[in-house]
Image (cartoon, rainbow, N blue to C red; front, side):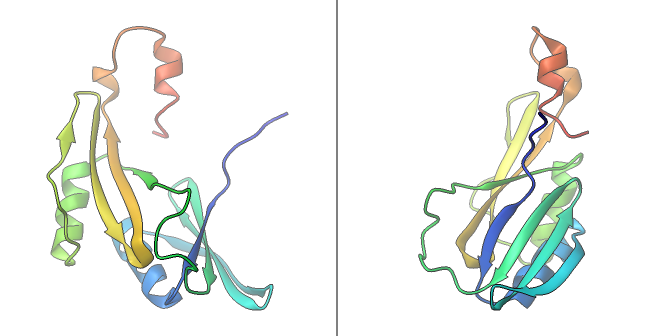
Length: 137
């Protein structure tokens, strides 16, 4: 049996704003835009991962059981600079742990993003094959 995470499902109070954000910030590509269960549903690819947007405002202004969505990049500094140029506010600078660099960023509808970069050359010693599987690159 093969299992993998297929998508994160996000409510969108303004689906156009949400789609534009993920397209402009991360190069998102719409894979499907259709009517299901009485609402517009859009599947958006971001690299190898997918987001599923449901055109309906979040029922809870908090994040419920979801803390954040992790988005891996191969150039964190460039991504942060791009997002800042588009007006995305960052509360903190990039945290650098050698093999893992990250920063948290806001997205529409109170979604919290973890933007991160894995530096394979700096992975801690140990079972390198398993550790390398953390990365999508």
